Length: 181
Image (spheres, rainbow, N blue to C red):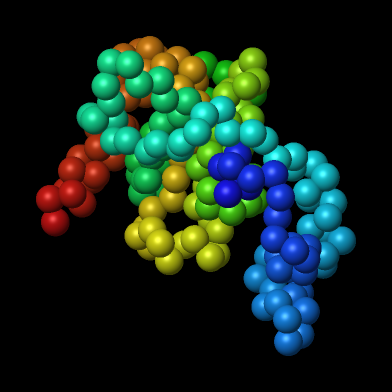
């Protein structure tokens, strides 16, 4: 709930939950070495208020004319991600069109992309590395969440990008073969 903006609080003794736990009380996830590291992380990762009463996930082909998505989420294989990451950096002079911050599955799907959407040059967020969330997605998939403003810029660049090259055609052919098998 916190990383989707619907709660400002965390469970009691959260620092121990993400780190070493408390014997007999809380099993630690051990994704941070110590409770102090968790506390420091939380200071630099503020909670946010959800901009609405609901969080709605819709397939792109199900969007209605009055829908206003704040981001586009891809559950993608390595080949698809290679294309998306390349396109996300196509019109940037720096190599940071995509970030991959550590965090829960929902923080990389909602929280970090929400903050990126507020920035002047929003970046895409590579995610779904959360060990507790991994069993919920296919083994060969990660996510890339792109704030809608950035997604529109990327879409506008498609026709003049690497997507028109023979190199991408070879990747695309492999993708099609994978889908067919």
